[in-house]
Amino acid sequence: MHCAAPSSERHDLEAAGLRVTAQRLAALEALRVGRVHLTADQVFDEVQAHLGTVSTQAVYDALATLCAAGLARRIQPAKSPALFEARVADNHHHVVCRSCAAVADVDCAVGSAPCLEPSAADGFTIDEAEVIYWGTCPTCQDLATARS
Figure: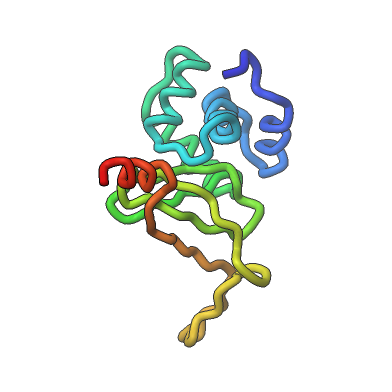
């Protein structure tokens, strides 16, 4: 990680009306640099590497605050730990590999948010649709082909 948090993270925290803390800066930077979908433990490892001493609870609190402010997004595919990402400005979805649990972003197929209209909304005003596609990633497909 970088020695100092880029000004964009500081600006984004301030613009969201949040107090700028070292934990929030480091967690937001961890989500924006490198891997796209991180578990809370992976974010903790990144924050700890950046700050030195930090509590697990401080990182969980930072992630919850970032999600509540719309600076991060939490997804939780079935049978997987929660994952966090910084891609929040659109209505994208995810594809998950059944073999290795790799996760990738999938842009909305058609239209604007929400890109899926329910057959019945039971009086709800829909503002977002979340879809998780399941399948086998190219690496696992190659491994299966090599084994056969």
